[in-house]
Image (cartoon, rainbow, N blue to C red):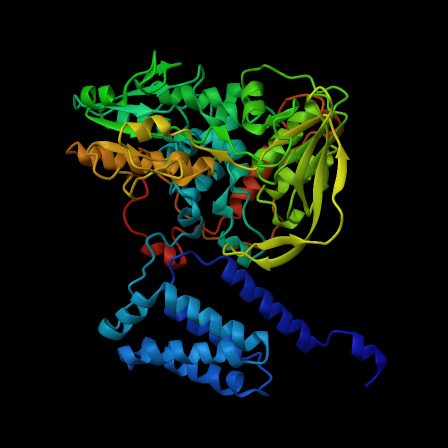
Length: 614
């Protein structure tokens, strides 16, 4: 063999790598809800194909596991077979020589522990307990269940108003989500099997930018029922919108002077201009939602007692969000110059801009809120902004585009450094923050590597301002005192949004789930509206009078993904004007043509119900 062949891919190697890549793409594009027993069998075969055959646990054990799981799928197993699968997998996990063997066994164990009912159902009845509630991946991944292929098809036909109307059927914040949604719908897009996922948020942005004024549907006949909604954020307003369409009269009680919750007070103008948010708010209010602003619920002076709302209204929905900050718990945190990210963004939301000119700022945290305050501090004139994060940059929970945007605007990312103490001068002002260097360690329960002690000395970082962005908390004491069950400041509610042992009281959004995404809060409001409607004795159906175009029968050649252009970083960091520029008409046409219309092809043809109603 020549030296050249040692370092050059053979044709066979290239084909195998291509097949592996195709397999990865298919895994990425798989919707949630596939049979867990079948998935375990398929992955086990893939792992067994990679074994060297030298150790018995891999060579024999994985093969026996395959046979046992195939017996379950073929209806040739008993309940004892399931116990045998578990024992066999444990032996392999404990005795295999390499990761191929013990990780394959661990994968089977995880599936068995998480889906034992499915294994038993296969044995008892010969069928799978798990089923595809929504086989279209992008729709399944959207918490609100928006008909993504439908509105993309409408955009391709240049019916932008109809596209927005279809989105509003499941999400009354089309503009806000077009600008700030974390687009989980793109994660499982089947277009990944061809090239890369469709820029769904970019297409939605194009639709809301070009749709003109889209009227909301007419409200149904009045039911005479009244619902109080505590909190004017995305969850509360979504519930109000759908309940109003159903014919119920809603009143939103908002503590602050502006509606929108964290959409108004937590997201800066460069991402979501207030006038664009108003497009959604005005549409929601046009349904007849009543609003009482700058009022709070509780037993204090000037507050409205919760018991009074229960007496005067037929149902109550609590959607107070998560609007307070979490503390670092380190020495010196009380220093002048230590600022909460929530408080800073609230000031910016009220157009009360602090002056950071010439200041050195350190932001502690790695989520989207941390990136928002980082980029805001730059725009407020800070001389230098550093992000202090105890894990790696790759482990940050913020969107990658937000992290890269902050870096492009001049922020430094100081990864693997945990805050230890804040140094103050004689006046009690911040002069520096001390940070412990870390190394990355073992995985935690969520699959993220924990930071571990590096053994190196603490690092002193001179600064004038420290912004704490390590998470948000819920102020629920007044509801706790009113008898509403609260655990770790979060209000307790079941999957139907009902508060236990309190008939007619519902809760949802961040105050139940903890701080989450905008689209999840919207979805919680939508679910609550449907369940409140049922509680009141109704079963209203929300419909939209929009016909989705039939799928085009045409080739889908490989094509690059269109991305949204942004203003130059040196210019945009000087103001709070929009960063993203959107896409052009030609780009929208091309990007929308990439949709594979999974709602009409593949498993999508089995989707339940109609997409024009819920």
